[in-house]
Every structure is written in C-alpha cells, then in structure tokens.
Length: 226
Image (cartoon, rainbow, N blue to C red; front, side, top):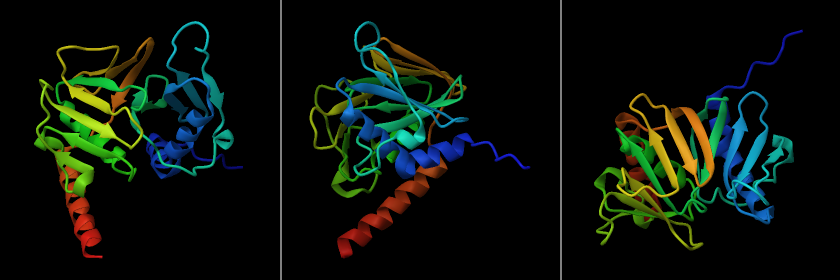
C-alpha cells in the first residue's frame, strides 16, 4: 500500500493563503484572551495558538487539528505568514496584536514586501507608507505619502478596526515586538515574552515584486473601468 506523500512547506503556505488564515482569524474571535501568533506543523497540520501573555495565568497555548478550525467565513484580518521555524512549523503573526513591530535585517524590504502582498489579499486592509519601495498600484489601498514624526521607513496597516499597526524597518528603538533576520535568511521573532527561531524568513524578490505590481496595476485599471 502506497503511503500518502508528505505535505510540503509550499503546500501549507498555499493552504494558509487560500483559507487557512481566515480560519485562524476565526479562532481569535472565540478566545477570551488575544493570540499573538500561530504555528502550523507542516507534517501533521496541527495548529497552535500562542497567547500574548507569555507567563502565568492565560499563557497556556491552544492546540487544534486542522479539522477543528472554524469555517472561513471572514477575512484574514492582519495575519501574515512570516517563515518556517526550526521545528518545521509555519509561523503566522497577528499584526493586529503586534501593533508596533520592527523588522531588522540586511534587506528588510524583501521581507516587508511579502507582508504587503499578503495584507492586500484582505480587501478591508489599507496601507500607508513613506517609502516608494512598497508603493503598489492598488488604488487607495496602498498609499505612498509623507508621514511626519516617523524618523524612518514605516508602513501603517489599517483594516477599519483600530488601532492601526505600525511596521518599522531597521528601527533604532526596538520595542518588545521585533523580527531580526540575518543575511542568510535565518531569523528570530520576538513578540513580548514569546520567541521563535526561524530557519527561513519569507521574502519577495525584485522580479516577483515587479510581476505583482503589474498584476495589481492591471486589476486596478479593470476595476476603474467597470
């Protein structure tokens, strides 16, 4: 008897973007305490929700099978797929909880472009940035503008449910929530008292970004003409 083929990282990420992120967002709506992140075991499909509270009361993680997840009736909110942990799980972070987060890397642009591309899959999300590196032709959903008092490159994320999230690149003032990435793509994610070691942090390279912006440009022109 032939055993089923092992599930790959790419297949897991594809499932997350098709319906998984919306199902994870449904978990948060049922919880009394906020969840800051989720890990999805690539081999088994089990999902672990990690509360904001890292120690003491309310810090226990929640583990579910994929079949136990809520039906995807809403949006993916501000969830983004960050990378693959050393234990071969996919790390998903809720930017609605990590409202001030910095990404520190040799090339943070390719990492944040991955987040921008994912966030724009949710039509409720609007982005404002002071950097042309992230400006895409998505109408008023991704605006390049002057943002006073920022002191560096930032992106503000708004999904009509305040407060907004601010993502900073290579910030000089790291708060409790930050992603640190080496030149080889290995990283460490810190969310308050929570920590994950990542063997790979996802990013979008220049050719893929160019193709994405072209697709968004065509889609924007089509929407304006209908």
